[in-house]
Length: 333
Image (cartoon, rainbow, N blue to C red; front, side, top):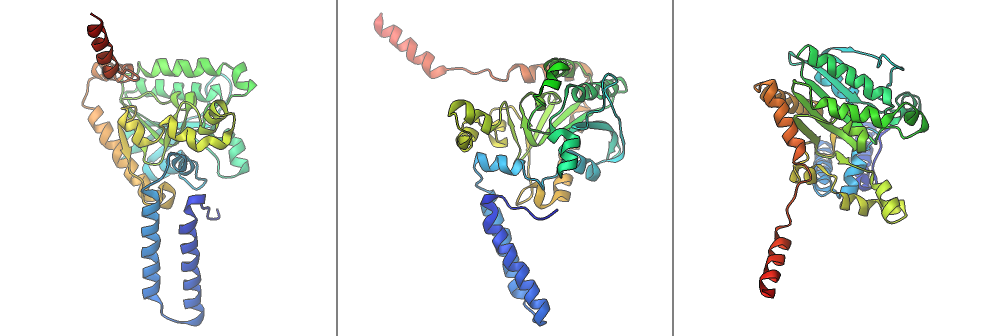
């Protein structure tokens, strides 16, 4: 696929173009410009680090949607061995937006499930642009039940803008399918590690997002609604998506601070698409580390810990307001 640069990556793209021209000139004229090439490469690396060190929330969303960003299938190819894909929900059909199967991670047998987008028009249509139908979530549930039956840990990789919202989904009960997955994932007595690798959109992500550990790649996002959808509701204009992204608190840093995510997996300088192999190796280490820790707990402890983890989400206290109210009451007395 041809290279692709996001709007804020244009300084990097321009430097890379100059580097390519310099190499072409050196080869054509048979002139040694190794020093200049090294200096240019260092400049590119420095510029990339500076840009990615101060991304805005909206820029983070753009990185999460980068067309060259590794998808779940790419990570499985790099991380896993002996992968055997399992198909179908045994009710309607095989939804390619969600796939999964048995594999090994450094010898550790796991059931791995992920949402999948396409790279071109044909594969995007096949995967429905990463938006699963109800049968996709029922397939995921079937695989998770199998994992629980054979005492295998479950690993999920999430990258979806959301479940498919069309009439076909409603006819086949998309809300019920996701709700059943939410309920059942609290009951599986095996370790579950969830990772947001790109977009984590709404119920489409939550449908396979209940776990003992929730990891997020550094430049992924996790949100109840897309920034564009939020802007269309609040400002009646999708052009305010950048403001919505900032207000929604959807970045990995925000979610870690709010304890909605347990760990941020660092990405290479320039994002996961800059070095997919390095990103896969880093993610694999993080997943295995968490699996080893979770495997030390009894099933009863896993279930109780999982329940308590999600039960406290959204709990907060307004201490300052309570104190101010008490002071006013005392003054009145």
